[in-house]
Length: 68
Length: 537
Ligand SMILES: Cc1cc2nc3c(=O)[nH]c(=O)nc-3n(C[C@H](O)[C@H](O)[C@H](O)COP(=O)(O)OP(=O)(O)OC[C@H]3O[C@@H](n4cnc5c(N)ncnc54)[C@H](O)[C@@H]3O)c2cc1C
Image (cartoon, rainbow over all chains, first blue to last red; front, side, top):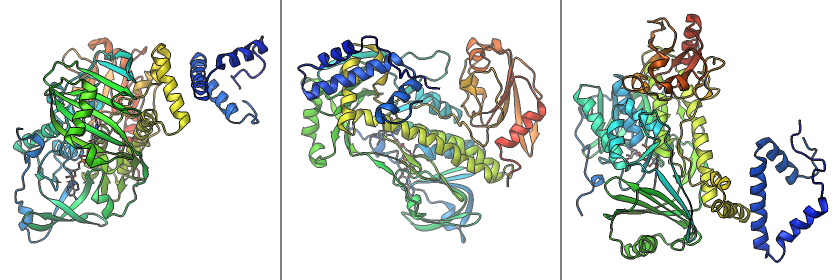
């Protein structure tokens, strides 16, 4: 059974996306890469569940693959 | 400078009677290599009254500075061999570690020791001291009349494998002679010539990196802490490590990268420049030793080749991060010696030795995995891995959660032989840490320590219940030990958990073979048969 939430779960989708882009504004490619890496680590720690993380990694690596 | 211990012949060449024999003398066991692993094998065999000859082409302890960190489990094994206490007393411990990135400290941590163990999680001790204690222990056993012979300047030049023995061609300062061995244990190190002589491949990963190690004597009262630097100003883009050893000796490791001029890096003035950049211009020190090393992570496909058994660096190598080299080598011979003894006595079939291969290959893979991960963190292999590594370091300075992700070497812990063919049944409701395949965990008793009572024979440990005494199967005897859960809270917590009673069958290497909630004669004998491979061809 899939544990990763793959149906829409962010009520304010546009706000989130804008905030994500805003966080990167004015950064060089290198700084942006570093921010993304930090963000992934922060979110991964928040999730904590290895099964969920593995599922997320799988989908991120291959978006077309069936989830679960 | 005074003569250093690794320059003094400890076991100088002496002529052996075997060199004057008209035909090659056959010994039950010959160990090739008197490094830490070969010496431990020989002491273990001698303690068990199995005659053993150790050959080494050298006559001194390991030259220069190598291993410094020895973990709890190897210390427990060395204690079973009769020399753990001296080593622990001589060794130093650190309880504070600091991690630096660039020019600032990211965080400091204190190591919290779990209470109720005879030995600490690890000690720092120079490998040459450790080897000296081993040689002294071997000499003491010899003096007691134990059948062990250590032959310096005996270089093995060729070996021949036969159905029921191995032949050895040996060179000494007084010329060559031959020996035969029923079993040969090859502990001849990373460049094992035994491995080469048998034409066996040794594949794996060579890490493209060089490390400069410098051992310096400093009288200054520098704190007894472990300091690890990522990308420090005095070694940009690389890492560095500072560690304390006994005798006011400090180990400093500088990562150098791949493309270096070795000869130039080793010049004293260049080492001095690095040390002053790191420790300050006004330090006073004496350089005891320096060298450059690269390392590899690899293992042999099989550790047993007929009557030749490989152990230690000869069988597997890891990167030094996590200190798993010598530490795992001691666990190899710990696993091997009791099996070899039973086979030599005819109490177990040769098949038992296959479990040495199975169990220690499993352990080697675990060690290689762990030390490879540390290496990948310290030396990122790609741009992306460097980005993530740096992200971890940046976050760790401000947020606890990122600290466990920092990997400067994971302390060597013993392997649990999950799924080993020797494992018998497990019982529900007992602590998972002591499942079949796991090494026994120490606990205080009213007098002394649990592990002081365990090892060297099969034992039935009955806690809070009764078990029969004097069990035996095919010549293998079981000693029964009864303990009350009141011996110590640690004993009860570690061995019983929430249960009222438990019966553990323990192997001579202190690993759990099987366990139950109550004694069952038939089940115990079945588990003993399984743990000794009796009934197998
Ligand atoms: C810089 C550095 C730091 C390290 N730090 C640690 C650490 O902190 N903790 C840890 O556990 N490990 C550490 N290690 C690894 C550790 O040093 C080795 O794992 C350990 O020495 C292996 O022991 P061994 O007995 O298998 O082999 P060795 O110590 O290499 O001994 C092999 C012996 O075989 C002999 N020999 C070889 N060929 C022949 C022959 N043909 N005939 C007769 N004799 C022969 C040699 O003379 C030698 O005495 C470190 C290594 C290095 C280089």
